[in-house]
View 1 (cartoon, rainbow, N blue to C red):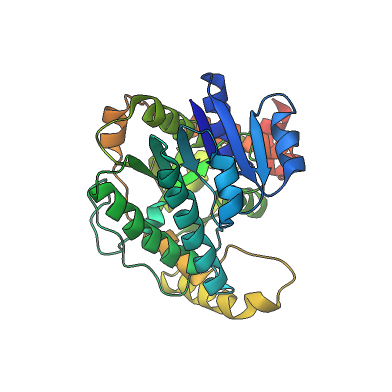
View 2: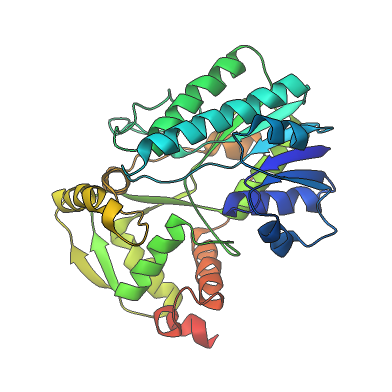
Length: 339
């Protein structure tokens, strides 16, 4: 197939593009930076590319020309309340332009890469492919945009369109073209040497497993339309143990009162517009961190015949990649720096 992609220079998009290319498919990429694309893929691998934003209808139409399928990975990811309306409008308009444009162009299959955020409901026992769209957390344009896009995509799915949704949890692994929030979180653990003891935990999935899921959906065209990709759940109390096992370091347990992360996130929302750098630390992010709801992706594993990599292996490779890129120090990496 010839497949149009957005977000191919991001983490999930990059690995999805590599998996599609390795399987023999052709790619047409819509990218904001051609230089970054060339740095990642080289000059002779991508069939065609269009420089532009995913909410530019003319650029989207050019990238869609002659394509059989679409993978829409791109999104503005920011859980801060700062610039919430701009984030919301960009993501909602982008989804409508890319997915709506794909249907107008007659493509056979579309994958919309959503997020666990679109289904998040703090009172739910678990989340799966049958979970309704979440209620969201009002501060974030990102969270609200994912829920709005979820309603839009489901309306098209209910009308019989071959649109597939995937819902990744915290995606980690090697070869991150930037530094995504889950990797920033792991780096902060290593740099601080602390293991915060907070309620609930986090759920991690290998980026290559996400990419493989996308490949199998496109090639198989299953009847099901929604695919959770939560991965392995790791309680916060076990983060220090696992990181210690991988690095050979000791992480000091630090009890954190349940109210403190949320209060700190609210404070950061207020002061972030005045800071010289962006931070993922926000009230919404802290609610996800301390009130995580486990996503059950057993349906995805069975339907796509997909076995997820062990979390320890994925986290080890993620840390090695961060070390090689200079995003964590040799001291922080412990014995990984000596292997």
